[in-house]
Length: 466
Image 1 (tube, rainbow, N blue to C red):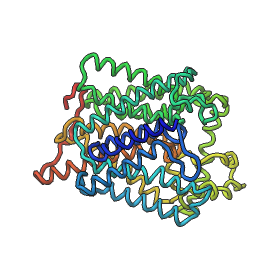
Image 2 (cartoon, rainbow, N blue to C red):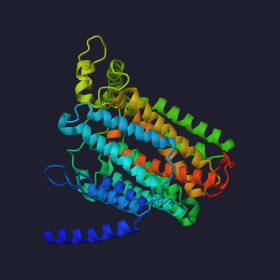
Image 3 (cartoon, rainbow, N blue to C red):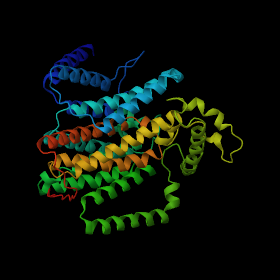
Image 4 (cartoon, helix red, strand yellow):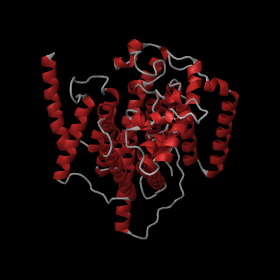
């Protein structure tokens, strides 16, 4: 065993030196995201103190590589935009809120959440933004996510079929983890799996114009099988987000005369299906250890959590109760006898809404900046997708981001996605690519001809014509 570890260490050292000198920073970001998704804490971690994990080793290597390249001018600095300032302000507010309150609460959980779910994704955003971005880089991102989607699809379907001997890594098969019985993938969370599957399918579809007939048929087959894996998550917010993402995708790529017809017809079908199957939809049995009644009760829990969050917001509207302090500060509100709601039912649960979670912790200061940041990112993605001066692959990343925002926002309304492993780092990485390309194109356009205004009319064809 010691010999194998020594060999692995030597290989890792050689690869690390090569990566610092020649490797792509975007590829490094992708490695951190994909390795962190599959070989994170539950795959292996050291004991005692701050646990060492495989993905954290990759993260340190990425930071060292970025610092090395920046020192020698190998990065690509770009003008700062409004979205960047909004992100800096948000991270500053979260950091200040953490350290001006009891950041050691629950063994330092507020600090851990700040670093893992906000500062690390913020760093990935910055590295991706400052990397050298071109068509080849973006295509590489699409290919990597598509291949990862194949793995996720196989894993999700084997989970759903109960073929645990075929599931990798093995920790996924452990019944001690939450949501056992649903397709969760290496994230151990069906929400994260749904968001990554959507990203994978969208990335694969972006490769359509470069594929031959056989490749396109395989792509359609993959999309169909991935849809089955998507349904195997047995999570209503994931299904809702998938439907919303599909509507956004069609609305953005179809010409005007087809957009209204197909999007309207699809929305009507989904609405009728939901109305007719509402009882089955709300009472679906999902987790192996929970019955259908518990599934329905989770729906009833949302208004209770929203009531607690709203009352907390009314008492501390501007800056909240402190980042990561919700579990302690909510206790007096659960004892409120003036409410007709069974508030005590929410005691074992965290907030089930990303925006309400931020609102209770950081008030309007943090929540307002987060909403502003999302708006600016989406605005940049829209401008990139509609910029005919850019090549198709560069525009496509804007399309992918807007579609991903559909499933992200749908799940953010029913879960605190900011504390789900893998979600923030994925969104921040894609946003970093958007911001980097937007800043890069704007800088080039203004330098060439300040009077150039991108054409806002846009059509996307799977054949590649725009």
